[in-house]
Length: 253
Length: 244
Figure 1 (tube, rainbow over the protein chains, first blue to last red):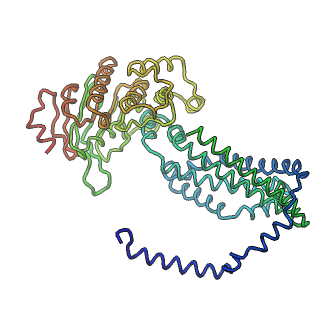
Figure 2 (cartoon, chains in turn orange, green):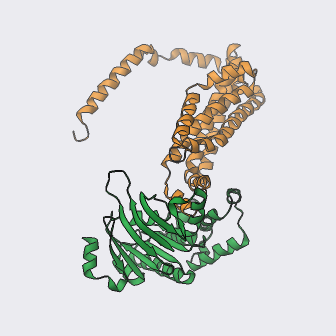
Figure 3 (cartoon, rainbow over the protein chains, first blue to last red):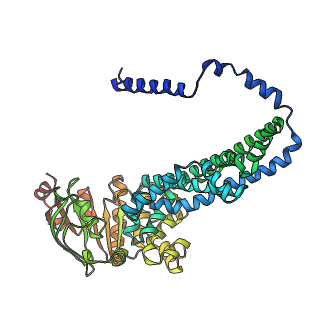
């Protein structure tokens, strides 16, 4: 029992109790979990054959989805980089502005993208631009916080060397910190891009255009075979982006 | 060139001062080694000279200007005059040897020129000159994380020297290196010191290195000055005082 202290059993009991309560709340049922025959039946009867004739159209739509995700996250990254310096304890301009920036970031982060999406669909009109704005806003706050944490955990040595050479404060910070954290920044970025692709699908379902909107249209018109084709295209898209991210990360590190 | 008058450094109010009542004066051409046990205040002492560690009280005059009265801008231009090397080198990872040395010029020009990487031909030949001096010219395009410890410290020296400093500080620059490499680093430092007529102030653990290369040795104990003299004057009695 070297590894197990008494408190671990107490924690385990608390977690078990929470699991039981949550299972009740979520209508969890073992029998329904195991008996998925309805799901399989639905897929078997409706998904085949795939509508390959829709592929050109769906690929075009997937480019919209990709464009929304890429533009939204990359511009978010560009804005998040300077913000992260203001939101990191070791590089902030002052205590007060540090707390302000941090609070604004968490406030924005606490609002789900779909809520932003619903607002922008009304204010900007239906289409990809509303989805783009929602993804941009959310990712500025997420990347701002993640990069700020990287800045905080970076080695402060090079920064000290910079200031002892008489470099300006910000110049010194940027040159000494950015090269250190760059691989991790990219890693976070590609993960956020991957998430944004899935988000832009969901946003498409509320009128944000792209593959998500096509998928939702097929679903609403009971065209399940077309929907299945869209799902396959989505899977391909996510896998390709993931592979691409892996290659870039390897090259950078 | 460098004057310290009753300098006290306290990390927290109420805590024991790391440096107590140091009154010292240094001239151009001196190669000073600072001896003392871990925690004796050596590092604090060195870092107070260029203001990396603010002094609590007392007066430090660097190149004719008082440190405490300096504006931020003035402090930056003072730091340009002081090169510094560190125990853990403090190089910027993922950049090349040459790029790291260029950062030593950052205090000399406006930020936008640094960001665009605009360095004059003079600065480029200065960089090449010092990379050659430390024997790393052929490695100039190599990333610094691929270098050995001794090589990294030589990059650190080149970076400090391209500032064209009149004072060179070293905060335990050889503490992470093996004895042979440490001796080699001191050879380079001593040679540059003489060529450029610097004031060099270095913390060191190794008494033999201090004896071999220093023109003046300072002993600190619990923040107090317990020895100040030439290597010849440093007797076993003094060493006992410093290290006991």
